[in-house]
Image 1 (cartoon, rainbow, N blue to C red):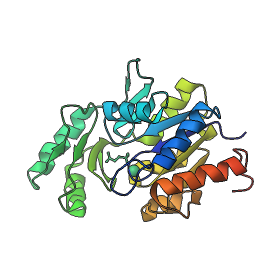
Image 2 (spheres, rainbow, N blue to C red):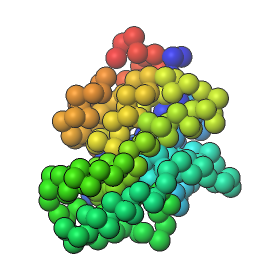
Image 3 (cartoon, rainbow, N blue to C red):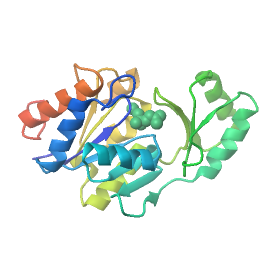
Image 4 (cartoon, rainbow, N blue to C red):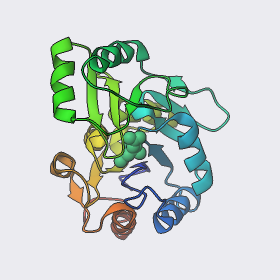
Length: 234
Ligand SMILES: O=C(O)COP(=O)(O)O
Ligand SMILES: [Mg+2]
């Protein structure tokens, strides 16, 4: 077996379009982790407690990359690794707020980055941020816009979690749907985009599934099983 673990994005990937968990994908991830000995990591822009709850409810082991790589956890009862620094994001947020009214999402729980409601002109905001020369990225997941440090992402989170699991990132299959998944898809041994993914994510992925959202995850995992977790027949 070339691939020994799987890292999956949450929103837009293992869900339906409206963020409801795709139960077929969840069942497949559970079996993969519990019966086939392929550990499953969840990677999301969402906060640590949400990610842990998702992992627990699917029946996984608590390996999560939260806040777009800012927070990495190797279990439910362990101290998380804080990989990012929120200070630069706060400065960028204050600067951007002078130009655009912004609504923060769950700020009381975020340790390393700032998530915003998607109710403003993103291209304009990106230009404003660029003019301020902050070391941050503004990224749109399709569900929220994030102000995050430009030195951390789900790819750097994958490098950390792979180290904690005694694996190489190239032994991972990564699956996602949007620009916050790009580095994770690149750093993994094989990167998969579900069919609903944005153009850039589709273009850097090794494989784009025929099916969208959670159905795409089911398709990808079935294809991997049929290749015995190698990429020879994909
Ligand atoms: O928190 C978001 O913006 C969406 O998160 P995702 O990384 O699970 O798609
Ligand atoms: Mg997503």
